[in-house]
Length: 153
Image 1: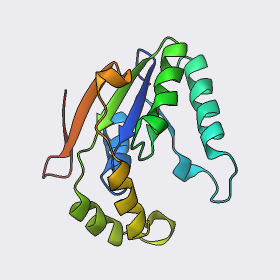
Image 2 (image 1 turned 90 degrees about the vertical axis):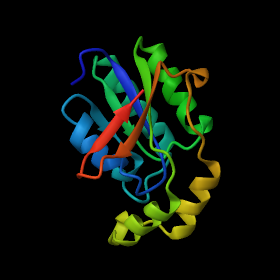
Image 3 (image 1 turned 180 degrees about the vertical axis):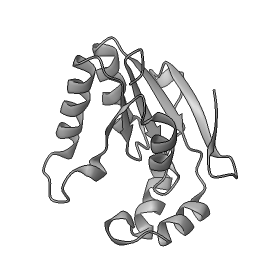
């Protein structure tokens, strides 16, 4: 887990590489919270997510929130929870590539595949996070062309 409590908020379209980035770059230091891991019919997913984030932070663990988190409506409560627990909030921004996300999404199977309209609807709401949104750091994440990622502040 990370040495300093931090909430890593992954921000990007479906099939942008967020879950793969978590697995390759954050999993050894951050606990994972994702609404995708909740049962499909689960009620109050937002409340459940916030409870899990608070539990990890209260235990001194860093936590990564792997959802699309397209706007302040989604990431604002996460930033507030981080700061309320004395933790930092770091945004990992995946710049939109609608064509690439639709192509990668089409290759997914079962529950992992999102209807194209979902990707397109998220792209309309997607906003780049900034320190003005309360984030202590904003990092841009891009594919490196070799199966990994480039991260820059």
